[in-house]
Amino acid sequence: MKKIRPLLVLLLGFGVLYSLPVFSQVKCDLLQANNVIATPHSSSSAGYWFGVMELPFLFISVFFAFMTAYALRGGKFGKGMTFMAWGFLVMAVGHLHMQIEHYYGFNLFKAILGQFSGSVAWFVALVVTWGLSGLGFWSIYKASKGA
Image (tube, rainbow, N blue to C red):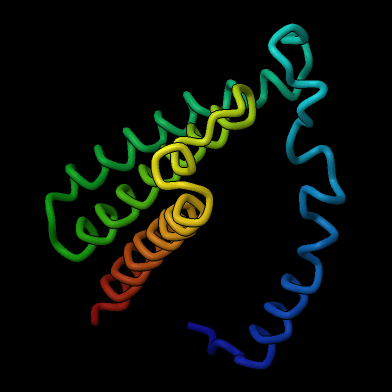
């Protein structure tokens, strides 16, 4: 197995962070359809259909993640896959929420919790997604090393 070079990882990380503004939604309209194009009366646009088709594929992926975790029936790999499946489920629900907000202008978090608490809840959901996925990958990584 090759050694991980921390300097290379650090430089790559800074490169990715430095390039984020270039690829963010502010500067790239290809990543997300804008509200003018994706209104219900113009449902023939590609952005509208990409947003709509995202959801079934996300939920199919979540279904198979849980099926894989169930097939592994616990153990180190199964534990990792279960963490990842739960992280993917939180992500899929978040994407469903984003699509509802994008197409209908309704933000459930802000409607229930208010402006500030809704934003905090959204951030917590992101951290939960990343945390569960990270724990899953870490568990699978440790299991694959035999640790």
